[in-house]
Image: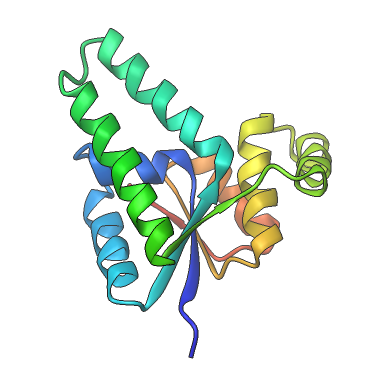
Amino acid sequence: MSAALAYLDTSAIIKRYILEPGSETIRNLYLRAYSGETRITFSLWNIGEFLGAIDRARRLGRIEEYDIVRRRFLGETKRMVRLGITSIVPLKLRVLRDSWVLVERHHIYEADALQIASAKYIGSEKFFTGDERLHEVAVEEGLDSSLLA
């Protein structure tokens, strides 16, 4: 039996490294990945978006441990990819084209559309987000989405 695919958008990934509502759910998801029950996936796009989000949080004074959070995220992501329990969805032309359709259909940002297109591209069984609008669109697009609050 293969591990279930769980797709995380940036707001969900952040909950792994910064304690906020929904962090416990993501912590448990990572534990299931380490035990082989789940495979975590996210887009290559999310790496830059994560770094931008924590940089902004640092500049606004919301986090002080930027370097620690950055190192933990990048180190854990590399380790999990090597272990085969995380996969990074590449920015393929097909995914980009599918995201453009979603932008027009749902009137959402390209970054959000890219999350849904990437999750659909890899056949994700579960989609995790902390963004209510993205959750609604994911459900409309047929994804089994969990809103982290």
